[in-house]
Length: 502
Image (cartoon, rainbow, N blue to C red; front, side, top):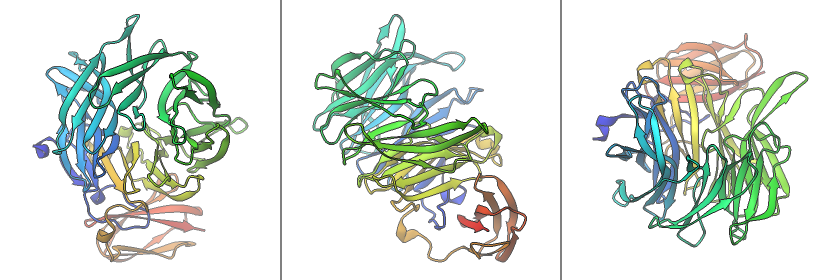
């Protein structure tokens, strides 16, 4: 039945590549693509240490505007096999999912809205909902569905923060706020039954937008993450709640971080520190140049600033992953994802890259990579995995295949940044590039025919050639000195290598 819904193909044949590493043709890299529709893999999370669940946006077939879409849940094995798909529809009621929270080995909590589609395929919200699924038999078995119709002066409240479980309990907390009035509430429920425990008003300045809530590792106190609307350098705020869930007055203002108040993430580390990551941007008013990085900042448990780092190249547009930009691995390392060289609408065909990095707790880079550059890619979410690796998801578009409109992609990386299982990585290199670095020419030895593209560090295509079997020579003398990326595509695999021209 799944095969009737979509075509699932291995990503390594046409898609992502791992810098300098040859990757096995394995299903840990997959595309979910139905002809003439536009799919996006939004949220991604691990469930039970060996499976992954993603929310999948799928366009309504009859709609003319691709933004008119619905969400499905997709269950994926640790081999990348799609095990189950749930359309999240009940009769004529549409269930919109915004957040996922794994519970134990087989439980999954989902938070979002419910409503219906009008005659123009527009979504009409009716309220908020919480659903709990049992995944023990690799299907989405609904255990309960709670619907809430909470209004304040005819204004609908909705879930606005990722949910969190209080350590050592079954109590689940989620932020509930109003899109129009700015009112905030803290909602608590029993994760296993869905029974409401309490709903508490939180009063903060009207220009504060709630982004998330989390527990600290050292004293298990709850922290609320807010951002200030607009372009303020003081955009991120962390406040602590006391035992009665009242604001304690203990507040962190992220001074001079340049962290934009959109898609930032705050989290607690087992070492007691607090980390805030997101899109850092500022303007040099003398040159009128906009600089954009991925920025990560750490603070002590007393909210004292510790370290900071700006990642990615400052002269290109680097934008945070749209929904989840930072994740903490079990060993304490930190994964970062962002959209590099991001500009333009996907249907413009503008090539983009995905930036992926792993940092230690002192914000030193363990490894980083720039992925893509041959198509339009967008990363939505990143999540660390129990094996110390990381899984990322998003969507892409290729002008060479307009009938696909857009495809959802999900890629699982090993802790060292490679793709696939180590014992399945090819021992014989399909492509050898030398010398590196070079002053003018490079020689490329290929075992297969195919195509070859050279991209600069901004993701621009600067050379495109047919790749013949045997020895190829490419003249780089007309290019300025710098870093370039060689991307080859054969009928066996895709490969990427970085070279330096001096």
